[in-house]
Image 1 (cartoon, rainbow, N blue to C red):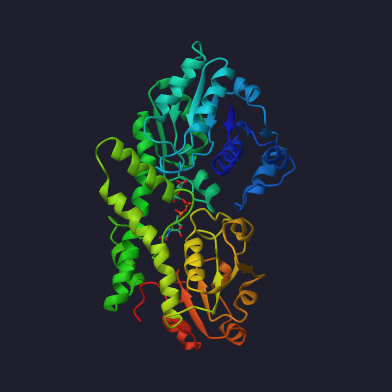
Image 2: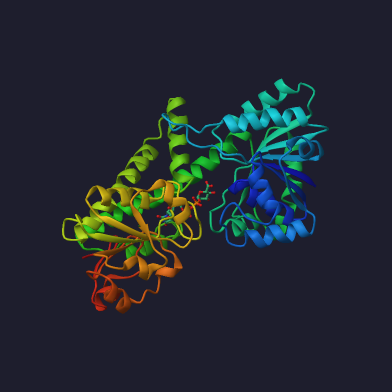
Length: 435
Ligand code: UGA
């Protein structure tokens, strides 16, 4: 099958590459000539484990190519995916759909023959209707079915998630659209991935509901962690104790500094807005959003407390900047609020992240970037683990102690246990571990 993927950002590039790997013929189109030139030269615009090799292999097999010109790719395609960005709009937090609608207009003008246009970007309920309206208005003769096919990829595990999904959701009003999408995902039948066929609005809402539920799960365990600290209980054991109940499930119950990234913060806000507009506010999700925002700031206070109540004039070593490991993504990363909070308290910041420092530089000021965890800890009054990169899982505490001004660790990801670290002569503060 011939596929055009419009937008070679995170979702588009991963989806396009994996669809090519299924055997389809895929052209990834992006307006940014520098990005396309880099991809043609084999350089990835994002860090995603395994992506460069998969791109190289599919380019070599001539199933995958990159272009800046949308029209020829769309004209030849049986399915055109819209995978352009939907950033939060300034002011009201609603998803900014201008890129999606602009793509729809351009696609409409280039359509030939029956084509399925698929919204892959996360888009609010009703966007598929608007995309269809725009296409029919721009090109009244177009033979088109507009389908919603939300993606559920996690950064850092995107290829695995695409190839072995828990489910595929396809929202189509026109049975011809559903049939083409069945062909697109046929290679996954071997993996027995369930395909859920719904109407378009249900598919659109399912994506938001999934992310909001996961964000709620994380926020719930984060609040339990705070409670554990006050009553002398251990949140990891609470998480295990509840997670073994199949109805709850053990995943997404790791307490931490609050969720970040390009999806949960943006999607929960957009859902709140959609629900308010519909006159049925989702108060639980509204609370999750505000609890999570406050939590990121509260983490700076936790570090200050661990340093005896003040960080003025002290040096704090931040290990991990990205919102989670195995990505270079700094969007809404808790590290940003934590570092700013510590700087407001008068701290000097040293920081190290295996992949995120380049993206962090423009977002933070007065930070000294280090070459590894030990360089970062030089002269520090505390090390703070903000992101659980593997590089921080087996730190040499004896070496750290010789480098630091004071042996203090704040572990916002519970990489270690209090007992472990204290045995090595450090003062330790974790998340939801009793004092
Ligand atoms: C998330 C969803 O997991 C994907 O299913 C979805 O497709 C994606 O958003 C999206 O909408 O595009 P992602 O943002 O890549 O994926 O990252 P997650 O692994 O879900 O982590 C999100 C945040 O939650 C991170 O800051 C992470 O540290 C935090 N988290 C996650 C916790 O604090 N505790 C947990 O138990 C799990």
